[in-house]
Length: 259
Image (cartoon, rainbow, N blue to C red; front, side):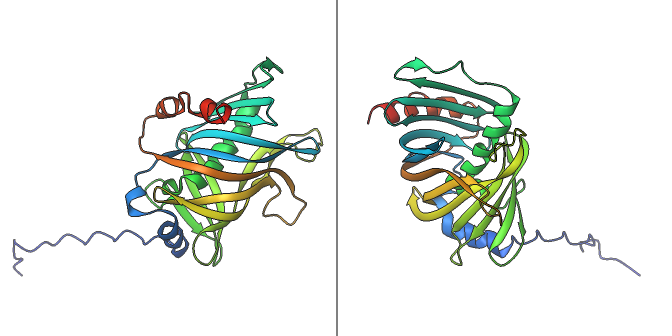
């Protein structure tokens, strides 16, 4: 038998698997084609935060890049100021009241483990980083729920998204290091957000109103800790970790203290 030398006898390459239907729904509703290269966001929020048993008004400015971390400044009730960050696995938190330090700056592995959840959850404000790709994997659980695995500062992270039929999220959950039941034992506990409204900024359709708390998405009790409203969001394009420092330079402080 003679084989024609011009004929390609190599086996055909396997076609790349199609993304799950839920991922397609989410991407179509959340990310315009012009925003597929967005890696972070500057955002302003306001609402109420629970401290102890009381709820206090707050406003905050934040720079978030889920692939690397975040930097946030928050003003509570006009007097309490909290500045926290989680960048490449390192966390820091400073708290002042009327300009006076309430306590020394907090650092350490427990704070880093707790704040990592915020870095992970912030992906809902940068939905382009959750579009299926080489480093982003969607696993469907049912018609409206999927787990999304993606890297945060080089480490594996995951969000569980429950979508409306149209494709936008109505609930997002992960785990957070803490002791919400005040048992004296810290561990990874369910934590997440119930999403109430969405808005579009620069091609990104993101949660604009919602409630954060412990126990979201479980059959057990929940404990709300934050009720938020996004008032502004500006997409960021760039890949370098130092983009957080560049983008955060003066922004959160001016946004929070200048109102």
